[in-house]
Amino acid sequence: MFATERQDKILEILSEKGAVSITNLVKVFGVSAETIRRDLLTMEGQGRLSRVHGGAVAKRNMKPFYDLQERNKAYSRQKQDLAKLAAEFVTEGDIIAIDSGSTAIFFAEALRIRKIPLTVVTYSLDVFNILCQQKQISVILSGGHYMPAENSFYGQIALESLRALHVKKLFLCPSGLSYDEGIWDYQNELVQIQKQLLSAADEVYILADSSKFEKKALLKLADMSTKYRYITDGDLSEEMRELYLEKGYNISIGGSKK
Image (tube, rainbow, N blue to C red; front, side, top):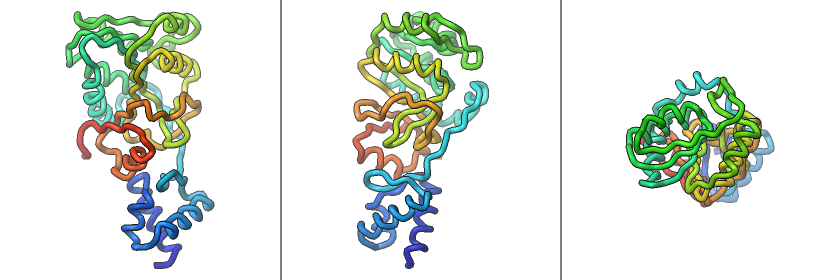
C-alpha cells in the first residue's frame, strides 16, 4: 500500500473513531511504528489531524454553542447515562458543588432519584429547583446577578458567596475538553464561577458527553489533570478512551454503546 493510500485510510478511521493509536495502526497496516509516525507527521503538516502522545486525534474544532433549551434536547440519552454513573460517586453526607447547564440538570435529576442525604452548593437555578424539595438534601444557592439565558447566577456577589465555602466534590460540566489543550467553555461570567468552584473542591469530576471530547470552546477554563475523574457515555470510541488512559486520565464510562 502506498503512503498516500495508507494516510487516506487513517483519515477514514479518524472520521469514525475520533482518535487512533500508533499501536493499533501498526496492527492494521502491518508496518513499523516509525512508518506510522511519519504518516501522522505528514498528515499533521497538511492540517488533516492533530498528533498527540501515542497517536492522533481528528482535527480539533469548536464545539457549537446553543442556548440552554436546545442543549437540554441534544445528546439527552448520553447525558442521562453519564449522569447516572456520576451520581454513584456521591456518598451519604457528602458536601458537593454542581455546575450549571444541561448536563448539570441531568445530574441533579439522577441525585434526586438516589435520595441520599447530602449538601449541594450551586449557582444554577435549575439544579436548585430540582433538589430543593428533597428533604434529605440541603441546598445552598449563590446569589448575584441573574443570567436568564442560562438560568444561573454570576458576578461579584456570587463569587464572594462561593469564596466562603469549601466542598468535598465538584461536578463540572464544560462545553469541551481536549487531550492536551485543556477544558473549555463559553460564558465568561460563568467561567469565573466555575474557576472559583475548582479552587474550592477537594475532588473534581468532569461530566462531558462523548460529543465534547477533542472539542474546544471560546474560553479555557482549566488545564487537563490526571487528578480529575472524567465521566462520559458509552458512545466514546475505544480508541479515544485508550489515548486518554495512556496519558493517565481517569475515564469512567456510563451506559452502553448504542
